Structure formats: C-alpha cells, structure tokens
Length: 572
Image 1 (cartoon, helix red, strand yellow):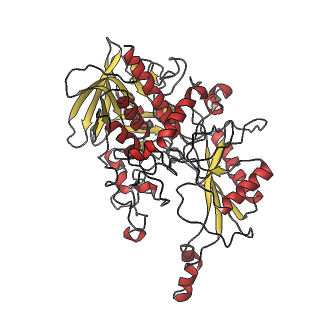
Image 2: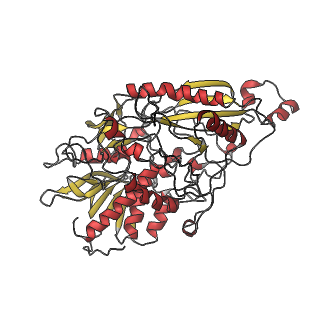
C-alpha cells in the first residue's frame, strides 16, 4: 500500500517525523517511507556511517591501550560517568553524562548512546516473542493496567519483522515463549548440549540456543541491502561492518533511503512536541541544534516518538502548554510513572569436570549463548511472588588469562601451559520481570539544566519485595540446574542489579484500554493527540522477562501500518 500526500513545498514540513534512530525509530522510518510518506528522522547523536564508522571493529586486541578496559578518566567522577559501559573498544559510541547530568533518588544506571542508530549498534540482539502469558499478566494478577492487545494482534507483525531482520534460532513449542520465523540456529557446544539433555530428562526444563538477530543464513532481501552472514567474531559491540546483525544502519535505514523519501538530521535534540489546541493535533516538534544550540521547528501530519524509553518520557514531560500543563497528552496523570527494567546480575556458575569433555573444543567465537525460558508460575507451579524469569548464559573453556591468577613463572613451560585450553565452565544469569509500580517514575528538574539549557532528569525507580523474593529462586534454581547436570564447584552470585543496568527500560507512556489510566490506545496512539505515536519501550505496560527489542519492532511496524491507513481515511 502506498500513499502520496500533497504537502506545501516548505523545507521544514514533512509527512511524518520520527524522533530517534534506534531499533524502533529505524523501523518507523522504513515502514512510513515504504508506504509513500516523506519522513524526517531526528537524532540527537552524531552521524555514524555504516562500515566506515565502526573504527574499532577490525582492530586486534593488542591495538587497544587498555585491552578493552579503560580506567576512569581523572576528570570524570562516578556516578555520572559509567565506567563499566565505556571502554576503549566502543567508548566513542556513548554519551558523556557530564553534558546532561541526571539525579538519582534511587540508583539508576542510564546508558545513553550518542550516535545515529542508537543502541541498535551495541544491543545484545537476543530476540524473543512475548505471548499471552505476558500480555495478560497485568489483568491476571492485578498489577498495572491491562494491555489493550493480545498475542494474536502481534503474531503477524512478529513474523513480518523477523523475516526482514533475520532471527536465528530453533523451535521449542512452548506456549510461554512462542516460536518465531527462524533462520538456521547456531549450534550449542558439547557441554551445553549435555546440560540441555540433562535438564530435559531430570527436570523437564528446556535449554536451547539463544534466538539472536544475527544472520546465520541471509535471504535475498537481506543480501540486497548489503548484509552478509555472521562471521563468528563476537565483536558485535564495536559495530558490524558485515551487516550480519540487525541494526538501523545495516537494515532499516538502507531500506528507507532506497525510497528516496527519508531525510536524516543528526545532532538534533527534540525538546518538545508542538500542539494546536483548536485542532487537537500535534503540528510538529521543536529542535535544539546540538552544535549551535539554535532552535528550529519542524512540522508534519504524524509524529512517531522513538527516542528510547527515558528520552521519550522526557520529551513529553517537557512539552507543557495550557492544554497539557503536566506534560503532553498527560490527561491520565500516568506520564513518567510505572517505569520498569529487568533485574538481573544474579545466577550461578560451575565446572564441567569428569563429564568426558576434556578433549573437546569449539571453533569460532559464537555471537550468542543459550536460553532457558520461564518455568515459574506456569501451570501448577505457584510461588510466593508473581511473574517469572529466564536465563541466558553459556559454556566455554578458559584461555591463557587464567594463568595470571593461577600460575607464577616464565619461560617455555609457562608458554606451553598457556597454549592449552583451560577447564570447561558454564554460567547462567537470570533476567527477572519487574512489576509496574506507580511511584517508580521519571521527573524533570527545571532548576538544573544541561549543556543545551534543557531540564535534567530525575530517577526514582527501584526494585521491590516481589523482585527480591524472585531473586532467591533466580540464584538457587541456577545452582540446582547446574548440579543436576553434573557440574562441580557450583557457586551462586548476586551483584544486586539496579534499574537501568539491563538497558531494558520500559514504561512511562503506557498502553491501556482506558484514557483515564493510560497514555496510549491499542494502536500506540496518544489518546489526547491521535497523530502522535509512541512505539519504543516507553509504551510498555509490563516487562515480561524476555528481551523487549523484537516487540519494539513488531509494535512499530503495526502502528505505522495503522497510521498510514488512518491518513488515507483522513482521520489524522
């Protein structure tokens, strides 16, 4: 379906504006341009060219002064400079928090990219469908507001985006984790296969290879835009010059540019959405140039906000007027509330000793791990907490680095020992669902401004009793499974994950069935301004325990299709 719109020949006027260029913003640009709209994409970060912009992608380990571990610069102080995120392999992709500091009432790790493509360049690529167990959870246990959609609404759009993005994986036939349209799965290694068999036989639990947005076998659509199969380098966080993993630069932006209907403006900070109260519609956005700090206004018939969860909340909170004194579209009073993230950094590890694998090794650096889908609070299993968790992880053999701590000496004997692979180990890390709490929120501090004179962000988000109860099982179950599979020296760990660390922020502009309790309807439209759509993580009413990015894609493609249809009907 295409749509040709007549618009005035004004340089600042477009059919649609997309704010943000990450996973959901890229999909919005692709879908809207392919359906005939002239689209302006606004990105606050700097330009980043595909292939040539990944300046560290092909460097050898010894070419990095700190071997990927950059010490905290002397002119930076925690917590505003997140040293665990920045290193000399990809520090150039990330935002310097000192340019726009934020305040934490509760600890919150806000990780912000500063590039075209956003977090689609550095994301973990784990891609899982959500099912009705996730979309019905709020209605079932009474936390949060009911999602206005169900799996049947998303299923065709999951298939649509999967076929373009490319998800490698295997079918499991589990109702709590619907299967996808897969490319061939990456293989598990011998220890992972052993543990998978043991868990199925002894505990009736599934362990499978992760479902990842890395091309194991590209199709014609993917190769036509320059993508190639995964090279098994496992250096994805540096950017992939082969286009083997899905990103805006490798996939959606090339497709959008092929239409000749896309205009991209980088270093453009959207400060607010403009509103015509007589028409009850948004008219455009106000932008601050990140270099000159000069404001500019751009206009369009529809606006897609895909700036990422926190930034989308911030834009709407900062868009105040007589009609919306508490933030754009905030008739329900829910804007900035019910903010969520997965809690993780907890699990167990052990050694695969005496299992007959000492003579086995593997080839390449697989850019993927294993996944154990949720099994708690399913069927007859009932816990003292609600919702559940899944595990990611993998098995590997340690390398020469083990000798740094274990061995003293030098010479030929040490070199010979360093050339031998170390013992097999297996690690599991759990990702748990966080409930939507009304007072987990984002607000603005208008008395403390950033480098561009805009209000700064205040986080008051924390994990609570339900998450704490869940974490007991998250650690103990990991150890139980590894021990059941025959591993030795099994140890649990809990690094007390804070919100933000998982980089799976969701909520604040949630979908719902009632404009009195939500911001968005079933089509990701703002109830109070029907030509504004939010399809990034801000729109989520709950978090499930699976990674959310595949659902960002499906929701965005679905909303774009609806938006263009509404334009054709002259309803927007």
